[in-house]
Image (cartoon, rainbow, N blue to C red):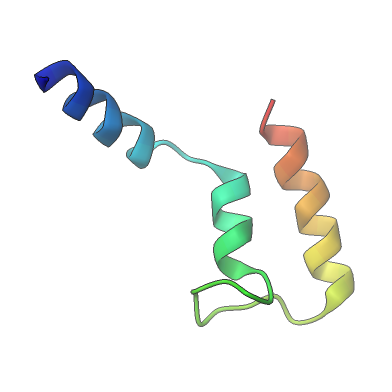
Length: 52
């Protein structure tokens, strides 16, 4: 059980650009949203490029 908990926290702490994008998009939970749709779309492409 301990390895599973450790793996969960390691995954949660990783730099995940797609997760950050989801938090900043129009429906996200961060107060710091993207200023416009174009910026949001550009950042989505960056996040998808780093997700592989």
